[in-house]
Image 1: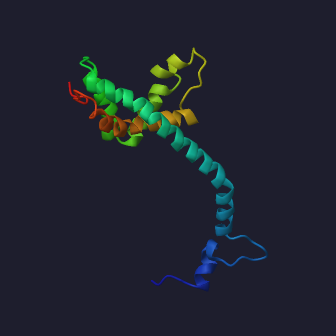
Image 2 (image 1 turned 180 degrees about the vertical axis):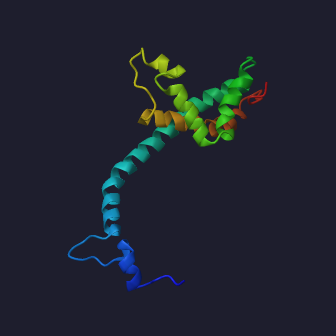
Image 3 (image 1 turned 120 degrees about the horizontal axis):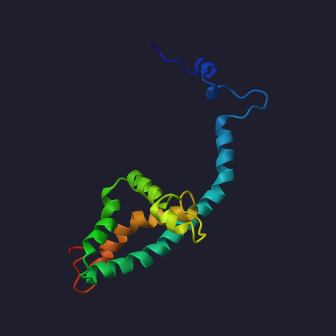
Length: 154
């Protein structure tokens, strides 16, 4: 069976129909909606990228130094936790972060009495999740230059 094209298709598919009496095409609406949301989304994306980029070396470098220099028994466990984002899919990692940070989760319970804002579904929570997800990409390369580096190997 042949597919209709041209005027035959325009009669059956609403977005291909010609605009009548000042009607607006879906393309024009999507362009207007996109233009009205683009500036705030761009600002949020720049803030998010900036915060993550600033925090990653501030968190990752001390962790890398500690992993390179310590002989502590928890070294292997810390190295494994830092490496988890390389092994776990992002959705699984996000789910576990939600469970840990929710109001009834272990970290959420610690933050509630102090009056701090809970992290799930906030900008700060998004930045924390991004830093945790990106941590192995900072810690592993930063670990090797430190003297006597074993980089997470017990």
